[in-house]
Every structure is written in structure tokens, then in C-alpha cells.
Length: 281
Picture 1: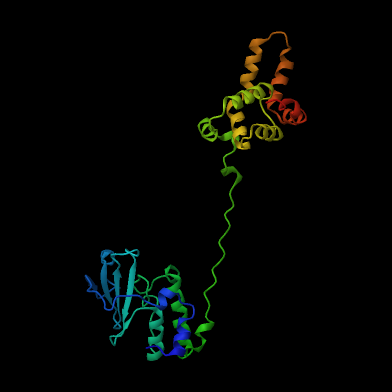
Picture 2: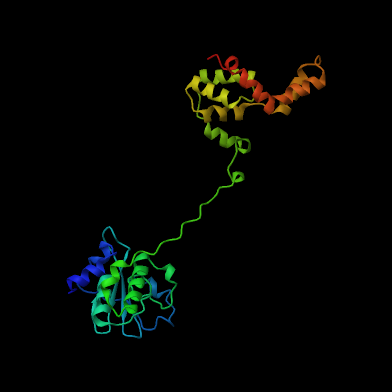
């Protein structure tokens, strides 16, 4: 039985699962026993659903995997002290250390599924790391638990913010036609005809014009933008088509006119004509 004052000190900072170990009344029979965890190959040993590790100093740890219920597959860890005392939580272990004034190595005498001495502390669960800090405090303060409540959780270093490179984000110009097709839902015939009429007037609508068309059709802006990206004609193709259809226009003048369709200058010019271009449904 843990004294009330000591109980309050030990329970500080522990979760309900640690404080109230809802475990079976007795330990199950282990299917495998390891007597020298520092030397034995533990890979097959840890695959056992029930196992016991015996440490040289007289401590044993029993690992039992739950077989039924909502928590099936989880593990319960039990410690047995050299004098036969069974400990089922970190609180009981701290109480035992204080009352017996005994030094232990909590890097493996804990309630994690760790059975080999010398493990990396950072690989342990927060509960085991908290136990290590409290055991260290007790050993440094002559096993006086009065200051345990002052021990707080070790601060974690802030995670480095991942900066996404602009080059890593797919741009509209780099999207394949198959991906564009996935972004464009089937349009109503009247919407398709409207956009085809606008496409005949302007191959590269400005963002303002895209928004206006989307508002007129009550469609998402991304849908209208993707539709134009998929259906607009490449400037080189447009040049070839016009060269084939006319021999009246001066070639240099035609080249300047067609290539300017895809330039920023054309986009700026078409901003001023948006009402004329997008005014019909």
C-alpha cells in the first residue's frame, strides 16, 4: 500500500493508464524465458506473445501481449523485484525505490518493451523518459520524493518548418493533358458553347477574365482556367494555321500578331477588353 503523501507525489505527471494498472490478478505463464539479455539474440525472443527476462541483479520483466478485446495486440509489462514484489506501473516502481532506497537502471527497468541494457533513452516512450528523470532525482536527493512534483516534462525541440520549393509545386503550364482532364468535370452544353466562343476571341484570357467567366457560368475558377489551358491553341500551331489561310498579310506583321497572343502584353491588353469579351452568355 502506497502512503497517501507519497502517493500524491508519485502520481504527479502520470497518466491514468500508468496510475491505475488494470491488469490480471496474477501473471500469466511465460512461453519463453531469457536469462542473459545482454548476450542472447533477442529477435526471435521478442516475437513471443509472453516472455520473461531475468536480469543479473535479480529483477525480472514479463512482457504479455493482449489477445482479445479492443486493445488486442497491445503489450503489458510487469516487473518483479529481487524480493519477489510485483510491480505493475511506474508509480509502484517509484514507491518501491523510495521505500527500499535502492538504485536501479530505469533505461530497461521500466514499462516499455525494452529488455536490453544500454538502449538510447531518446527511443523510449515519454512515460519511460519521465520515469528516468524521477529516478535520477531520487538518487540525487537521498530518495526524498518531496520534490518530485516539481519535475516537469522535458521540453521538446521545435520541429523545423519544411519549406516547399516553388519548383516542386506543379504549375499549370507543366500539367499533362490527362491531369487537366481529371480537373475538368463534364460541362453543360451551353457552358461548353460559351467557352468555345470566348476561346475564339482570346486564347489566353487574363485572371480577371477567367474570374468573370466563372462568375457568369457559376463554375469554379479552377475549372474554367483548366478548360482554357486544355483547349487553347499553341501559338506555333496558330501561326501555321493562319499562314495557310492567308497570303494577303505581310509575313512579319502576321508573325508579330500571332506570337503576341501568348505574351504578357496581350494579357494586359485583354484586361481592358474584358467586358467586351465576356459580356455574352
